[in-house]
Image 1 (cartoon, rainbow, N blue to C red):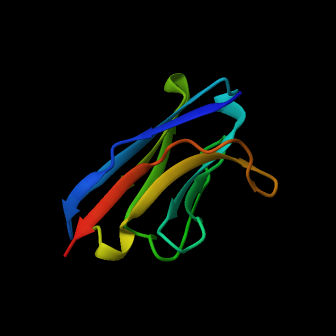
Image 2: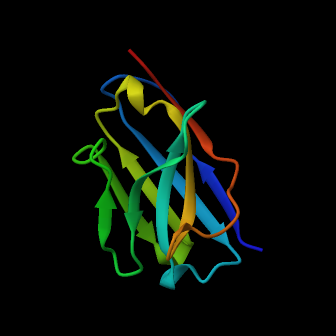
Length: 117
């Protein structure tokens, strides 16, 4: 089955930057749309950014202009560059393969991002 491994999270001060990575295995990555999601306790997981197989991108309004999603098909990896981080960006971040109705494979363990004020 598909495996997703997220990394790159950590503790950063408000205004700082982090770059998250997600590597997929057992997936035909190059033809897969991918998305980054985040979740905080008591809230539903939300999609923050997505990228199509040909590089088209979409962002949630809350991160537009601050986050950039990209992909390296040779490495089966999708990235999320996060700049100008805010305390409200604190969450566990996950990636997933985007299907017709949203995430379509089993979730990985996620990576914790904590932004201090």
